Image 1 (cartoon, rainbow, N blue to C red):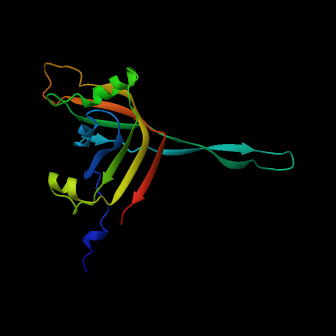
Image 2: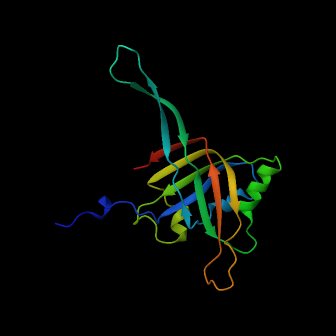
Image 3: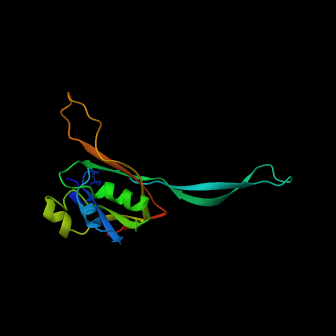
Length: 165
């Protein structure tokens, strides 16, 4: 008997990055496609403690830290949203946003219209995000034929995973 398609694992290619809350002008442009989006890692530092009567060290959970989120996308005409965001930060303007990485099952989305109407199966919410590094395009090379890619590293204070199934 064949395995049900609904039990297949998620693919990494079906996702969308969305700005959830923002006071930044033009931040809705981030709700476009990205070539890659690195998923932040949650890390818990360990606090160790030992007394003279113990033969081993005791371990306790310490501070929680999250790795940075990196977004990359192709450079497009008249789209400077990512670089504008880091300039807003530099100039002391409103710069914090909450981002959402929506992860879809392979069968739930086929075209661009599906990404705007479909409910994601998993959501990674990233809170209090701020830009840390922006590279507005690839290094120039007259012999290369690739698409120019812009990159941005984003720091976040907190993250949560929501399974909507």
